[in-house]
Image 1: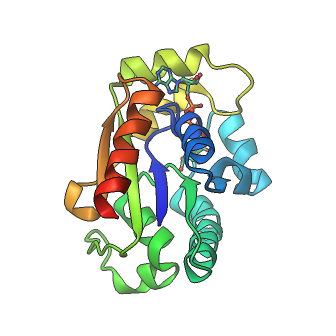
Image 2 (image 1 turned 90 degrees about the vertical axis):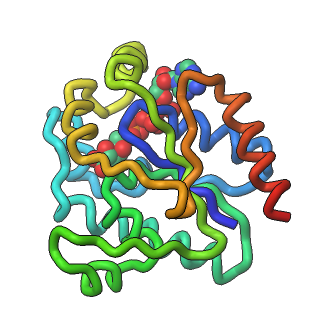
Length: 182
Ligand SMILES: Nc1ncnc2c1ncn2[C@@H]1O[C@H](COP(=O)(O)OP(=O)(O)O)[C@@H](O)[C@H]1O
Ligand SMILES: O=C(O)[C@H](O)[C@@H](O)[C@H](O)[C@H](O)COP(=O)(O)O
């Protein structure tokens, strides 16, 4: 089983990913650690990434998911996966790019991979980003993150999680999800 923790910058992906990894004893792959240096520099300057800039990063994370799945391991992957297409690249790699018509992304899910979508309002997330220290991501970029975001629907193997709840509470819901699957 792979859980992909997703949502806009500042929604709590890293926090929940680390917490879940500790609770479940599953390895954590933090998306921020796999950005090419140019991407980090760009975001630090307050410039949003483009599809082109995100693609190599998403393909790296796809390789990790593939590797974990083929070795039969459980894992947690943290990745904003803002657009439907990005989620498809995480699941299917470059095949997702050739199989979709521009502007219309057919979504397919992959058994064993679940998206944990953290959602909340712009104001709540912006406040948390401003309070967060030592992170390269500029709070001003949050507007563009919301513009790009395509929230997943539950039928896309997504669990929708309200970030007004505590991390502990959100984690309990995921553990309940795991229990129901087994
Ligand atoms: N459930 C929560 N309740 C309150 N604050 C939270 C919660 N989850 C995360 N935070 C705080 O919000 C900020 C952004 O969280 P972070 O995990 O860095 O988000 P992301 O990885 O999505 O950018 C951090 O300062 C973190 O401590
Ligand atoms: O534009 C994107 O696709 C995302 O912003 C992605 O690049 C990631 O979310 C950043 O690394 C910011 O880091 P946080 O999400 O941890 O704030």
